[in-house]
Image (cartoon, rainbow, N blue to C red; front, top):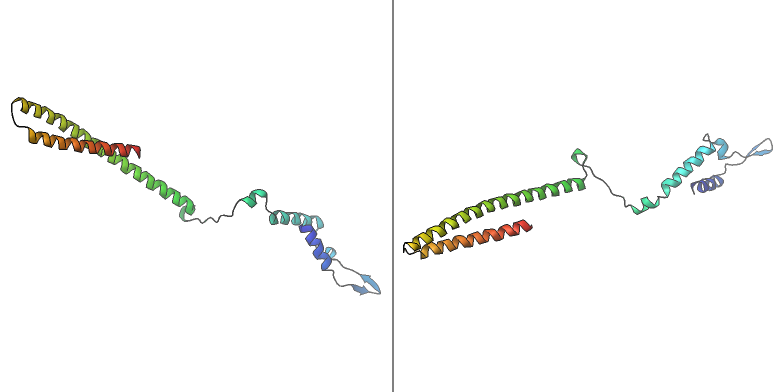
Length: 155
């Protein structure tokens, strides 16, 4: 394509006819040019390659890449930030789970000790209604922590 275009342009740009001693002498651009014809042909082929993109290049949209500090693109920077935020959320979740498991274990111990004391006091004939009410409050708190742990484990 570039060769045909180049040849057409040459024919349109014919130099003026010079008459010397009654003869007509036509100087063409080829004679005046210092570039060999095989070099012009190679250049024309390269221009065709550049002018007509390959199918792969035609499908790929051009993406402007802006690089920030450290040579990272903004997409890479955003991905790194997102990964860091996800890591921090996961660390907070793990810490919360550990704290709740510790609290749950403390409540299990208190519930066990409370149940033993209530049974011993009842066996001695003491009034244990207030102790039982408090023990049930501890049990409800234990259940809430277990529910929360299940939610955190699913997340």
